[in-house]
Length: 76
Image (cartoon, rainbow, N blue to C red; front, side, top):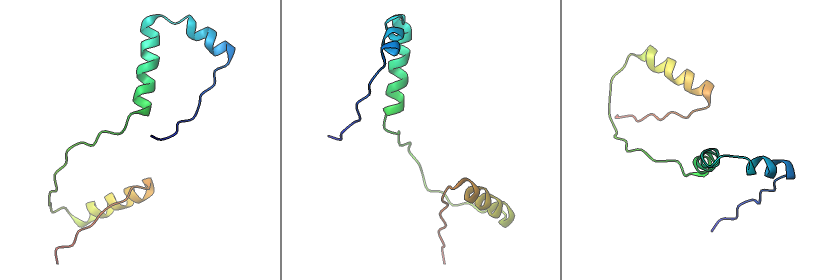
């Protein structure tokens, strides 16, 4: 079991939370659950395609600017 940080609430925050409707409280809890949820791993399939070199270079440049890794697999 991993340790989770303890969250402390101010008196003002607790007072505001007591005024929430059940629907609002449910929304807060659902938003928190989504924030803490493990990322879903979607199914994927390896494909091989041929694309123009300039399109590939543009993709790699955009990925590099975004800090996203790219993979290259050489067949020969």
